Image (cartoon, rainbow, N blue to C red; front, side):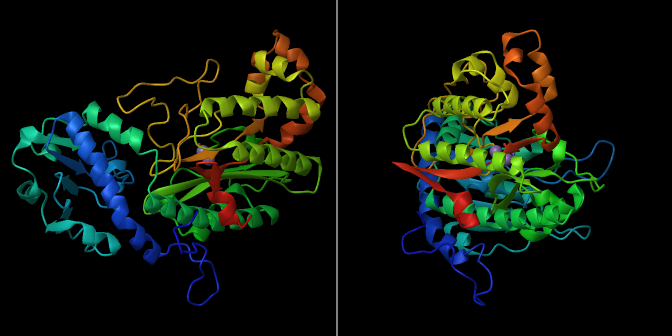
Length: 461
Ligand code: GLY
Ligand code: MN
Ligand code: MN
């Protein structure tokens, strides 16, 4: 549900287009988010036997033998406190009972534009100390280093400012486990990210129907969501025809295909560092593949319909195999009982990835295999190594539901000489192969007795 009394689909002042990010909504939710962050860090510090946590935003990575840097990716622990995704070399200091401190580096630099001065709803929650050179940061850090823990990627010891306990597992396990449950503020950021992503998905579908190349479709997507390539939460998967069978297809061909038959797009967007992760599959014509996508969409929605607090996600993944087995049989792609198709590895050959994963600041958010906050791991079921989420679902977790079905010849070939191979109807494979495959991916928030579908809400149904 949206926050009480707030319609998250409100329109902008001109009433021309849906508002993507409503600062007033985020500002209303943010103080409670900070309270949750404080109490999570209070417990993590207690567990670690420490008195202060210092969180480093990170530093850009230089390119080998060059003086350029790879695009900066902020430490997700830093971003979980505040909406700053592009401020390297900043530090948050939190001491239980105190207002969190942000040590904000606004370096004097005539080669680059320094970060602008902090502004926005979040600043009221922080004691902000602006410094102009890196070494001045030390003045704002706790002096009792033995009571500090530091969270962040340290590549140069100067970044640790003599703090020796870096990324202790005691604290991190707790924070990673708890982070799976999102605050109202985080969910609102993700609703906004979904609305942004849908703008891109609509533009991409239009470009596909106009016969454009993968590269052109990608550019249309980026323009519509308002992200430069480096601002996307992950590399867009823009796959025409057979390319849809490559799970993380990483190219964008600049050539228009002679005939565009199908389009699989897995593309996200970000708001304040929170991602959406959406996949849609389209058929160019109103043909048998279009009906197949529609059937598959129904299967995906049935799985979404199962999501609720208390469900073991590994069980939901196995239920997906059962549904895919039935679909393979009903559509004649592989004939056999569901049990036989699952046991002989046929469903895994057509659907080799997991049903979903946690989503948040990271597209594959931390903690999906954690059984508790001490670091106990729940392995995926045997034969399902790529399942990224094995936890019991809890209210306010946000995750993806993304079943897929593809013609991956190397996996079909692996079945040769095994009983599974005989179940497959190779004529039907020849029919499906030129379309690549189908994946439908929605982002859902778990509720006590169901879920909120952020993606379908953003699409308007
Ligand atoms: N976009 C990557 C994934 O769906 O997991
Ligand atoms: Mn995903
Ligand atoms: Mn995806």
